[in-house]
Picture 1 (cartoon, each protein chain N blue to C red):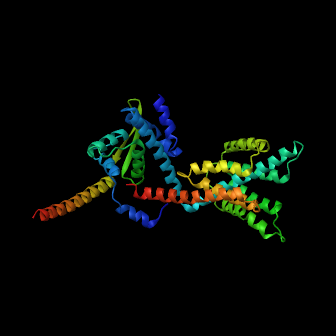
Picture 2: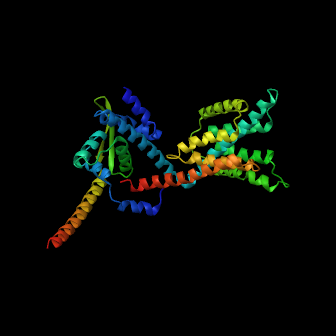
Picture 3: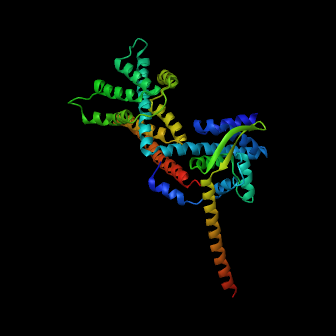
Length: 121
Length: 266
């Protein structure tokens, strides 16, 4: 369903952790599906575990929104692979999200510090 | 080898187009991820099946409510015609082999064949013409008859105006085989049309998660049956209520959830 205001709304929606770390896994260069899942797990400190179904759903949406590009399929170790690359759009979205998360974290941390000082005094 | 086969079977949950483009690499990742342990493989399979069903649901939702309803009307027509054919064949089986098919039944069979192959607009227009030619429509038609024909006429009109865009395929005629078997079994096993429709409705309910169209189609045919048996609507009425309730919930959840998932997906 394509509804005008919803597509506008989508631009402002933040990335959820699985998508954030899946895209972040591609910062250093193209990776295939399983490598993306492993890298996302490393980057998230083991918190994000992307299963095959989840990862490919994320990749399909990222492809449809030109956040990633799919390479040509190849065979490695008897298994078919395809590398995915972060596009400039994907990099920009990721960067925006990283800034947003940093700002959110900073705001909450400073409030926590301020209130804990007030509690102590 | 067994894992590969299980994986390929699980991939069938995905829509064919996606399976074709991403299937082999998904299978590769599944086998890699499942190498850690049997439990990891089982978990991956579960996630894959769920992912496939979600993709199908998203496709249904993306089609839009209007298209979903139009498709349901297009599906309801062959189901209704099939039930009519079974009913006609059942009567002929009871009457004996000497009974000749009437012209109406031949025309209905031809319309059903057209609808199944994919000539939906031709089938719909022929169906409407058949209702005018063979039906009770005329200057002295009673209101009760008009009400009974309202849903079939509406479905045929929708089918004529908004047929499904799907490739024509004569292999769909294989659906007539179980119909013939049911028609042959019906008098012996005392299977009635509500029972046959209930079987189709169970399949439709199982598919509500990813595609509500068959459920909507079944509910339309239940309404046709209910109105056709207006003086004694008990079994059909109960089935109708159940299907309509499940349909409303399924249609709403499926469309909204998949649409929301698409929008909030990141």
